[in-house]
Picture 1 (cartoon, one colour):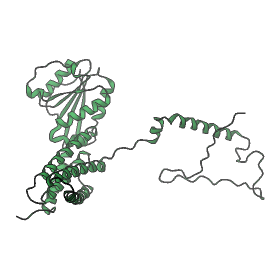
Picture 2 (cartoon, one colour):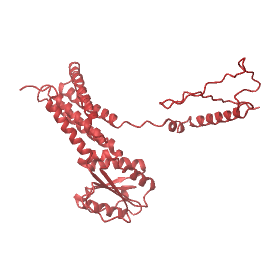
Picture 3 (tube, helix red, strand yellow):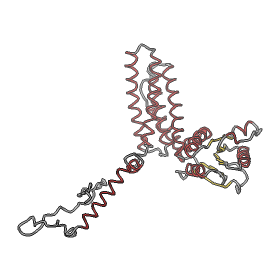
Picture 4 (cartoon, one colour):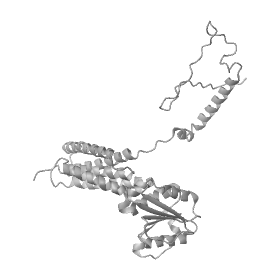
Length: 358
């Protein structure tokens, strides 16, 4: 039997089909119902509403008041009920939605606030308590619940609601990495693990891009090419490691397969959804040097104002200063040039500070 040690045209076709599936998963229509008890904590309510602002046109979100909500009905992919002082009413709403087959996240201050309802097993499985001790906590807990409850629509939820992308990407990476580790540990044919692992890593890159809200495009194909090239590098790492490390070959390949897949997922996430850089002004204002910078700005402003009020300041000539040129013309600084396209002012900026009091 001939051994398969390279990525074939059939593997490329499989990757392309995987890209089509990723695009289909990304653009799957979604419907989310949010029911809010108006007596709930304001920061929690705002955090929930902000989390469920859809980023894709394929997602629809409906927000209702608990007191004026319509009777529970099927047709929603997920529902969130934010409880306040009327916990019993929120529980009834969550139970009614679950009986319609809708997975429900019941947001409460504490799970101890919930009553002991004797629900059928299939109904109870669709209702999950989501603790909400604060805005940040409710977002993180909602993301964990939503990724678990979304099932096959997890990529669509991550694409439309960025607050749950981290959890979904971690799930995708963990699943693919464990699969590739198993492929490396179980050797059916010599060198047959390379194309299998590479194809899985390429599929992972496409799924991560879809979860970050990016449609499959030429750039996605470039990412796939990079994954295939990286697969060759990981193969060389595994080969050299088996030569120098006193451990079984299957263990080395399993470890390299796991690590390579995790690296692929991390690179795909950074490529498609890089973290936002903090604003420098916010960093200064929120740090210990913030008051120092503000004080320096005030001193510079007062100094500039004082210079402008001196006699002769309007003409630009210092008091008692003789003309610098024989013809009587004064030598002046060149006019400031316009800012460049990089947002930097190339003109002159003079800052005077440390004025002595008379």
